[in-house]
Length: 212
Image (cartoon, rainbow, N blue to C red; front, side, top):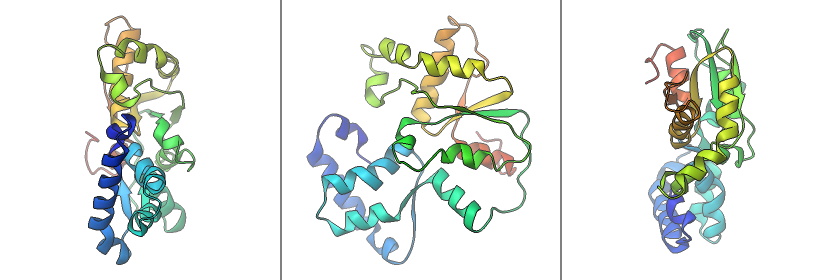
């Protein structure tokens, strides 16, 4: 989706990516297909940033109108058509981190809404920034600061009482949260040692996989 280049101000490369992607998907969009993004940063770029960077390209505008975040898409299906039968309670609750790029889409907490469709399963919401911050959060020089920024989120996760698993709408933020929890516990094994995407949790509730 070009988010790393966007962060570095390479708007020409982002514009080229937007135009090429929109042209490639044009036949499917014209045929009535929806475009579902798995990662909120990509959904944000395709829905909001690309149309601002390339405002005069009708294909880019059409792509923006056809794009949905995956949790947004599942909740829309649930509200309008209903979900398929077969959702089963999970063993324990779920702590979900609402990624910044998901909140920036102004669509509401769709990840949490989706997980609340799982019967008899407690959903605890973490709304603070993970501190990941894209490329900034994985560089050696800025990683220690990224951990400090995410300290509020790490503490909120530690406060969850009923959850036995952790998920984040952003896979990279999820990894950062796990690293942050280990850092908070001074290298000791924290309660959560992995983070999944909410759609993986839904898959597990349907018995489609173990969510990994």
